[in-house]
Length: 219
Image (spheres, rainbow, N blue to C red):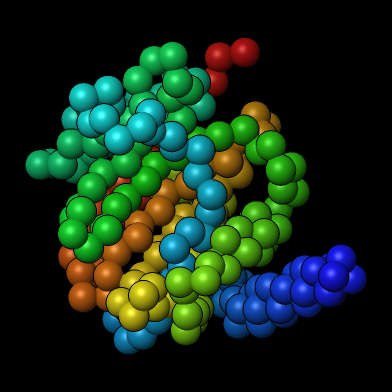
């Protein structure tokens, strides 16, 4: 029985590795390829963010509006009107925030800053490692839609758009990743939404991207 369990685990690991490798082989950030309207199936999570919320009690969340500054991780941006963002209250770490675009459609935007605990040496390594989070029993038909290098403030960044189906619903995940090497901080801006909502919801992500600025980080 133990042999069968170990064999199954090894086979599952191999399948995940093959899936990630196949997806990454379709991603060539050096060639800026843009796709305007994805047709089918990106991931439930391309990058595991550090934004944490304390339970389901919304009264415990801290709300943000307008200009948002994060002194702990050295960045600022503007939350677009009329949206209100929420984050965990003190004493939880202030990594960033989330904006609910539609609870019914599970459409959300996250902004996150965290130290590079996994010690990613490059954007390619960070993006490839995080593709592993696409593996989920409820996720099927994963397809890379876009992968290209862009800028996040003065940092080089990678933008990945993937499509997928979750319990039969066509979803999109659009994510921007940058590494601030001198302070070893990873910044993530991420949108998860349905294919039907994407053309409107991506405007929120783009506005956050445009207003993102690096700020000094206290020693």
